Image (cartoon, rainbow, N blue to C red; front, top):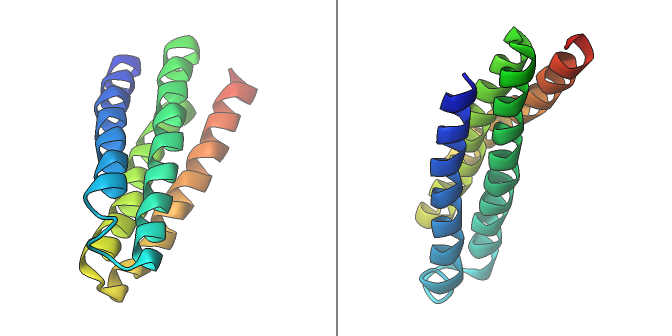
Length: 122
């Protein structure tokens, strides 16, 4: 799982940087300022949790723990659900998309708890 998480982290990191550049350059004049803030929040959490995904990959290699594997998948789910829903909300203005965001936030929290558990039990 370590190579899977490192590979996914690298790809998701590139996507996060591209999303940030898109938000900073292409969206600035096309969306309302409050939607740009929403988009930037998605980018921030996206990139922070790419680092968490890399940490889960390292933990999976070091401890071969089911908790580390769970953490990695939870971080991936969080990026897709939390950041993805914020990106979609900012781009479309469809407020209902924001209902998915807390599910992604929950995945982030559970991912951090699983990573802590992997370290504790490692």
